[in-house]
Amino acid sequence: MSALDDPGLRRLWDAAAERLQRNGLTPTGTVVLNALSREERFAITGLLGRRVGERARVDLAVVESRLRLTGAPGLVSVVTALCGPLEDRAGKRATAQAERNAVWLAAREALASYGLGGQPWAEAWLESIRPVIGRADARRRVALVTTAVRCIARLPWDGPPRGRTELASSVAGGSHALDDGSVLAALVVRAIALQLEAPPAVSPGQRRDLWARAGVLSDEVSTTVLTLGLQPAGDGAVARAVRARAAAGCEAHLTLRDLRRLDALVAPGTVVSVCENPRVLEAAMDAGSRAVTVCTAGNPTLVVTTLLERLVDDGAALRYHGDFDWPGIAIANRVITACGASPWRLSTEDYREALSATQAGGVELLPLEGRPVDAAWDRNLSAAMARAGVAVHEESVLDVLIGDLLAPGAVPCVDAPSVPGVP
Image (cartoon, rainbow, N blue to C red; front, top):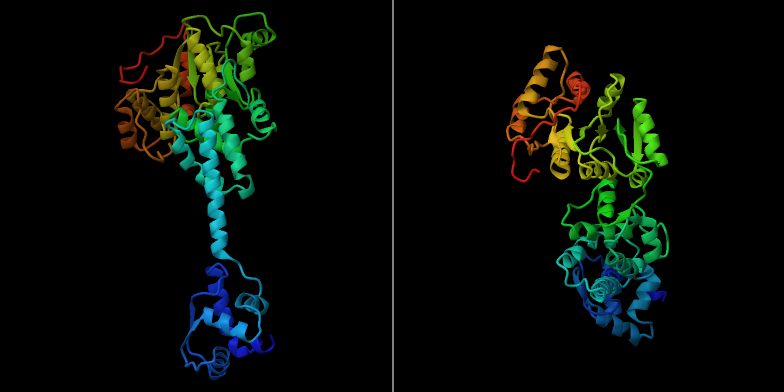
């Protein structure tokens, strides 16, 4: 081996090592060496038994044969001894491809076994989860997709919603297997979204909503909805506590569990004012309002939409006010279209009046930012906002809103213009 460790052969062995790793560690193919020095030409000539010039094309099969004739071990052994361990890159790629194929084969077999293979969302789901599976430990991928399919086959759960930890324990053997951020949860949520033809979930709130629509609750106590003046019927402890806070003019934070324990929330025909910003509800309390008010605190979470749906089922008339900015219009679209609310001081004329009043009062308004959003209830509103170029937030019109909440008797519900697709 000492003769083979000649410095003049170093470039040959390095080139051979690179080629062998691409070849699956088989001594085939050629390597080309350029600008060979006198020392290198002499060493390679001695190895090959033929004279080489400054540029040499060396057949690795010939090198293998020459090594064997001299009693040396094969080319792979020599190069490994002189250059270090070699990696079978081709074999590694083939193994990785085989492992990937096994994942998708297992996924399709699992879908078929549960009668889901022919579902219109199935192929789209398999395609959408490729990047998610690619980030997982290769040894766990088959188990992950088959467990995900087993979980998907259980959804939607019938009857009262149950917890995500219960589902995780029943399908994956661990209560935290479907925790937010886990690969398994990501796989299942993507399937739920496709089944419901919903947009992909990109936030924790959106993921909770998708789970809930499939009959699975993340939990029932960690998020709340802010209310004022709500006086639910019944003699239960929760109902009595909520009524007591309403009588005292205090806010009540209700959880999903609270809502499950309450019967009728309002009398039919009750007007419920829904706002976006907690400051509106706080100002209503300060003014002594007892009007039933619900605050979404931004984009409605599951507990907010659950309450609004319950109120509608009880016969309430919802009206909604939010910020005159693009996120505010998007939220209003959701509440008005999905929950059947009427716009509350959200017309084009309301925007113009609010703009004039705030500017006359010397209030410095913020510019509108982001992509414009069309208001579903008023075709002219978004154009008027875009022309003015400024946002008007709820805090700027508190006096008007509180005046509505303090009006004697039942506050009339503003009728929305007829817009196709809007309840």
